[in-house]
Image (spheres, one colour):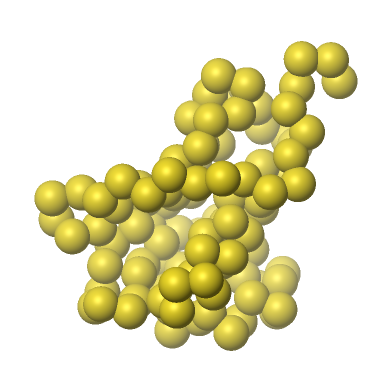
Length: 102
């Protein structure tokens, strides 16, 4: 797969939004991957949207993106409420992530 980034772990940038939520983003092959979240309280976020552009789709990047948010939650002690259907499905498939569910 020449020219394609093969990733085992994504490095996320956390950008707060004025409403108290934020965006976790990373770039892959020139395309932005995104998790949009809202803040329920100081220690709980709500994952509202997971986005992977079609140009880099089919590579498991959505899973890796949610996994990166799970890793961040573990590192920072926050809990997650998956609202987005994709995030809900990823949590259903990965029971080892349930420690960060709110």
